[in-house]
Amino acid sequence: METVVSGIRPTGNLHLGNYFGAIRSFLDMQHSHNCYFFIADWHSLTTHPHPDNIVRNVRTILAEYLACGIDPEKATIYVQSDVPEALELYLYLNMNAYLGELERTTSFKEKARQQPDNVNAGLLTYPTLMAADILLHKAVKVPVGKDQEQNMEMARKFARRFNTIYGVDFFPEPASFSLGATAVKVPGLDGSGKMGKSEGNAIYLADDPKAISKKVMKAVTDAGPQEPNSIKPEPVENLFSMLRIVSSEEVYNHFDGLYNSCAIRYGDLKKQLAEDIVSFTAPIRERILEIQADEDYLDRVVREGAERARESAVRTVAEVRRIIGFR
Ligand code: TYM
Image 1 (tube, protein in one colour):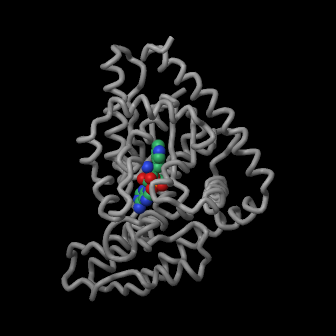
Image 2: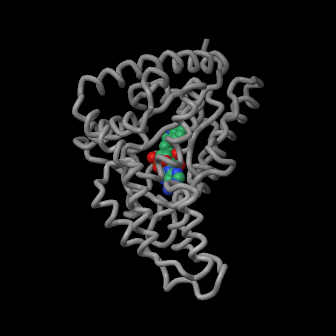
């Protein structure tokens, strides 16, 4: 059975980007693959969160994961910091990761720009830790959104490099996995770019209907098409992308037709979009509230998840040690 690994940083609530970028594909695979889904709490340390927030954020994300339908009976759900073997692998991979290539990654350059007073080594070696997360279970598929493509390329490079240096065929090269043929990028509704926690443009799974409606109605549009069949500018295209994700094909085609004949009223489109987002998120939101209240269940899920994840991690790291020459 093929192994699948995916992760998410506990830095806020889950939004539609997380769901349709990564979680959705994982949900399908948990029945047919050997799946690990973890909460990347070490990764979140690059921005120095307050200690009081760490446990709370991990719990929130855990409840939200489960509410999405990730099934702890089928998939192994764990917290990254419960499996210290990843740190040993991270160290080994760092020995063969070069300053130049780490400095050149777009996410590092972006973060260094965003937090110029905190350009720490963890930020620089973020891709090696992510590679360790994936290679720890020798995963072949990794459900991620488009924004993680470069990190995934690094993970493949580190896997190949390890195999080449030691003359082994040990780590498989992990491939990004999305539901469609291309990686998913869920747009924000503020005109440009992707939906993100730090962008302030996210619709969260835990948002109530009123909040969702308010966010959608505020979405950026334009004066409307000036001639039939014109190309949609980015803010409008983004609204249509959201429609394609959460609404039926019929609804999408209806508004697309209105746009192409210059008869569209953005207010109507937004109203429909808000309604469709609410029908999608409402049952998840209900389950989030239920699961969050069940502390014992959450404890059990992470305890059992850590045990199962460690079994696999211990096996990989023992083999890596032997290959490297610690015998
Ligand atoms: P993070 O926490 O930023 O996001 C978690 C997942 O959600 C996807 N995503 C999106 N997909 C499509 N459109 C969007 N607007 C959007 N926003 C977020 C991300 O692509 C990601 O799949 N580095 C990772 C966490 C990580 C990880 C790993 C993932 C650490 N180790 C190992 C996979 C395997 C991250 O920061 O994701």
